[in-house]
Amino acid sequence: MPAPNVAASLITRDQIQDRIVEIAGEIERDTPGDGLIHLVCVLKGGFLFLADLVRAMGDRVTLDFMAVSSYGKGTKTSGEVRLLKDLDQSIEGRDVIIVEDIVDTGLTLTYLQEILRARAPRRLRTACLLSKPARRLVDVPVDYIGFNIDDHFVVGYGLDYDEQYRNLPYIAVLGEGGP
Ligand code: IMP
Ligand code: MG
Image (cartoon, rainbow, N blue to C red; front, side, top):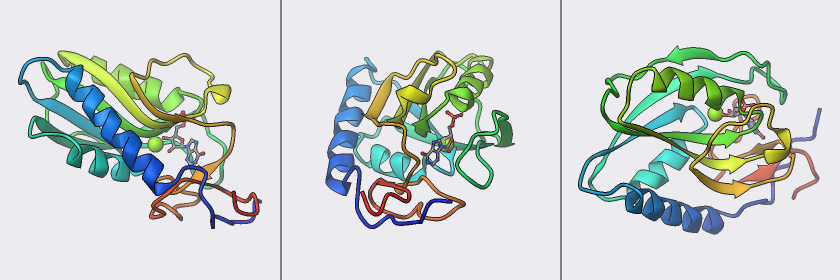
């Protein structure tokens, strides 16, 4: 069990905020016309990313939430994905962007893309704050990636270890004597 030392940041608050402003601009530029952009936040890890992303975007944004199980306690994925909370609104015909905290093995995102694509959105894109390419088990398309990181277990800015540390305003590596 790693020591929960999260005192220092792997990615700082300022780096995160700057990158989110860039991603918000890219999403808007990649969405021609004046149609709505419907952001689907994957709870719980995506909540801060969504909150900052929508505030960096203009008034074309609408949003909704869904929740899936990924990890239980600990730092290893079970490989099983379960839908815990479904969307409130239909996404049929809408321009949808999945907003996720991190792509690790890619299993969760693959599952999400499959179930959302089956609901016939006009367009389906994905934005992830973090990606760990070295850990990928399935090749899943991600349109917007905040930061690629090495194979560390990270916490903060929405990401948890056993439900803790989601409120850190930066990303830290768990148990490395302070990154
Ligand atoms: P995947 O299905 O293996 O891609 O895992 C995706 C989910 O696992 C993410 O949405 C996170 O909730 C969780 N996860 C993966 N890596 C980390 C990490 O380093 N810290 C915290 N949660 C993680
Ligand atoms: Mg997640």
